[in-house]
Length: 437
Ligand code: 5AD
Ligand code: SF4
Image (spheres, protein in one colour):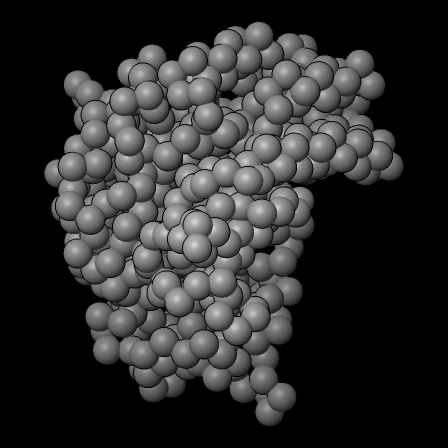
């Protein structure tokens, strides 16, 4: 039996959806009268919002739990949340005696009751995927930064053979348009100028009659919203209407995160991706016809079971065709319960290492070329943080590049800059007015 916690700390790992969920959990705990602390070791309650996507990420959850023991032997109340919580349920309590409660991504609106139960000595587990949306039970959004996430869709029905998401996040569901619009308005009023619509398959969002393109057009009309982004998309749900919106809605940023995973049709089939290399490239070409300057980013997995050198080279070749502006790349990690985990011909770790290095070297050539192509050009950035040097601020271009610039503009302001140099992961720039002067 402990007192009810007065302070909390939420730590999120993994994808943007987890970042969003972490913010909502913090808002929920704040609405209970608890205050946030920046230092996890000093908090009465720590929520670890975990990721299960690869083995390394999942293992990290338990080592992070262990690290919460203080020098004097005491520990905060610990909530294991997120996708590891969903995947492991009761098992999590057996794996670590330090865990006081286990709460899945569809049940975290019940966190306040669970915290009360944990404080009275119980160890509650809630990994339900209730029919009633957790969103209905969450408090209104509070103040956010200039760039905010907004979950519009959750879950996945695609069942790629390597992926745990259909098991941890459940079936595809779309939030009602009216709820999303209300949340976007609240975010805009509280200072958000950029809204990133989130979903595991965000472009599968539908209200039964219209799709994500319609939602984007409605959000674009909200006063104060100057930039709209969305991620992550699946090639199968990339409709013509959504592609067209890229050419027609100025607020929709010229950026498309469209994972391909691999370039070999044999491997794509074994992954159950439901697209081919050619059908993927044709979507990219359509997107470029709609908006010539659109930046493409992607996700890649090397070393999927059965991947030969020839298959891998097909992945390098699609990289050269698409010329990605940015990308995330991973070694295949077998996940419990997924079909690929028991497929024959698992690729040895050294081969995966070597392929990942070659893949990343190829991706780096294109991302640097993409950044270099913008040098000398004028662009508008949204200032989102301070730089390390005095007077230096960092802002994002429409293509999601970070630009370092000397300016007195504050976080949340948009300024016109001319980029002066390209580094692999960022750009340097000067104020457009400074250049003219
Ligand atoms: N192993 C490695 N990478 C994976 N991803 C998903 N599952 C796995 C796995 N088992 C990658 C995919 C996905 C991204 C979020 O994580 O590239 O797009
Ligand atoms: Fe991790 Fe995927 Fe869950 Fe996001 S949805 S937290 S990436 S397992």
